[in-house]
Length: 253
Length: 338
Image (cartoon, rainbow over all chains, first blue to last red; front, side, top):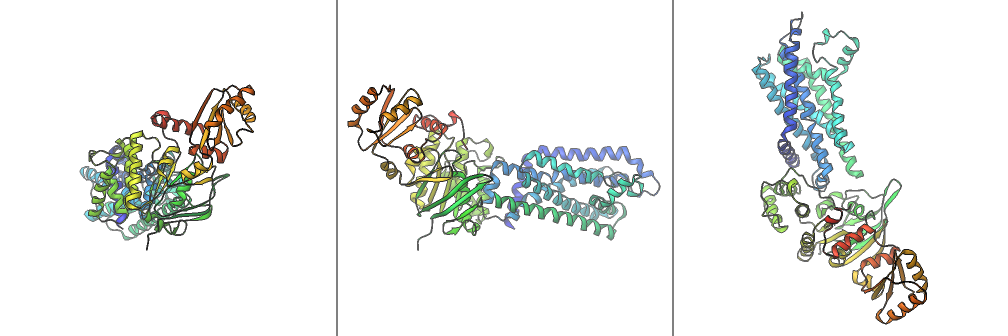
């Protein structure tokens, strides 16, 4: 456990020493928030639409932040592999699990920091949480777990490709997951059958639903449990893939 | 009971697709020795180090380091070995102290112990006067090498692997690394496995050397014994071209039975050379072979390499070695060699 904490601390420190990527990422999320909220807010006037459009769209800004925030974990690892420092870490007594979890958790922590900024901005713009302050913590929990899931994917790709450009390109695989979903309107307003089907099978939909439920409806156990199940399942899957790849990569040299 | 600091390998092999990077190497290195592993680029030195330090899995054969099997007891081996690879593995965003403290903590030192170890090692490798806030990315090549060595020492290993530790360094930095290697060996009793492409380095530092070429060990023993085995003196005859050197080799078949062509040079090995020189010159003159230069010297490890393989180390190594002998720096002559 100490190893994990040491490696999280190191990853966080390194991330803060190159703040440009973080700031760019936050700026993109804030841009999404402003553009979508001001450009599409009339969607909230449609019959049957519940709550404010701001509460509806803010999970999109949060999930998009995860692409850069938690994806940074993969970039940190690539940097270590390319510099040879990862080999140095492999030669210590640290477990492979700690080497993988360190950057993953650090990536998720960075994401939570970004989400706090986005939520603060949302509150300043008039965001209300139907579930109160507790609801905001639930949003942070989902952001953290989504960050872990995405960081696991980023670490897996980094270890698999050992190439910065390939790892960066692979992060774009998450864009279809974000945009083939209930990104801008609730599912019942989606006209195209294929998009409705894509939104149903897309796990991101259930993460959006869980975040939106606490902001718009209050405490809705069903949506929270489904969302938690999906995000935990995703985080476990990508985390195991990352660990498997770490063991494989270090065995084969 | 003595602590086991030995290195042992039998039939150690590593394949990369069609290439046999290391081909059935046997080694037996006693505790507390400085062992030089000498060979040209691509001969298998780094692959050997990677297998002995658990970074790379052998394709065949077995090896034990400090008493533990490198394939079956990787954790135990890692606790007992320090490794400074040819390409320094450093994090350019961290400071030297941060890296040393983290490394020590990952070897189970507590915070106070880790900080004390970091201070001691910074002094040991001469980095204690560097600005505390200076990040490693801003260090010179020599400073990075010294920090890399310090990182390999944080857990006081029994066996230290140094993979071309002085490649790319200026003569002063190289000298300080040599001093440190000798000190670690004499004061701590560390077994040191040192790969190098520099003949002089192996000659000066190692108690015993193995020469590797194309994945196979072609000669092994104490440097002095290896050199003595090929003769006490070597006469190097230089000619205008390879072709003339070949003609000279035929002409000197009787007079110099132990000889090796090396490009435009022909090397003749004798117990004592001085008395043979007039006759050498006469035979060449009678054969109509023009001699351009002649030197007498004691055999070097390069002569041992030539004797064992039939070729010299590659021209680039010769250049590097020549630069070294002339006091020039390798950095000036082409930078780091992999």
